[in-house]
Image (tube, rainbow, N blue to C red; front, side, top):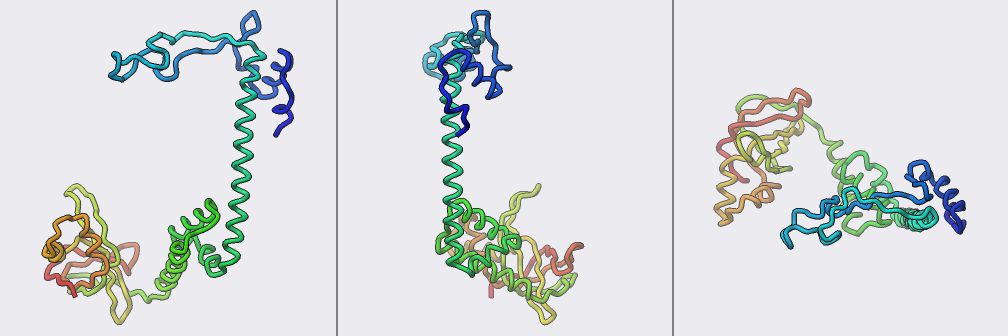
Length: 270
């Protein structure tokens, strides 16, 4: 703790020295008698005495309806400095405690990761997946991860490696029949309303490619045929399905292995 926070304030001179050391003295308004002049405006109502409340006609219970917009409070320099010092000491203790807790969590995280070399290698690749980055931040913040989070990190790295090893093929354009697995399903809002969009992974002899488009009506009908009419569960139902459908496909200008499909028809779940 700085020496200024430990030195006692026994006189006005001590108070002025402390306020000057903490860069407060120049910004204070001090009257002819040497007292600090502060605003005494009510912080709850802003000084008007009333607010957007229904009880008692909106009267502020902090100042009981008093108009404190221009109210001033005069405090002796010594008393003001002692109060400021108490606040500064409390803030310094909070800062020291936070630093000690951070150091403790860092030590715990280092011990945690040293006992799990596979997890350390997975989190070292945090730039390759946003969830890995989030897990790295959680480890630094809490000092440990749960068993489920550790398993997730290893599973994500395996998925990243699998995707990197996959052979990609250009998306064929035109009206065609597609067969693939739904790897992502999410609701998408547009000017025409909310539509469930699917990302379908299609595997061919030449490699795999992804196509994105609206969920075929047949999939929604199959979902509702189960007696469930809550569209909130439709996205969860669609994920993982293997579909066959006919659609018009166009290739993306930025990635030849990614395309868009529209007007899906003759859809079926395999």
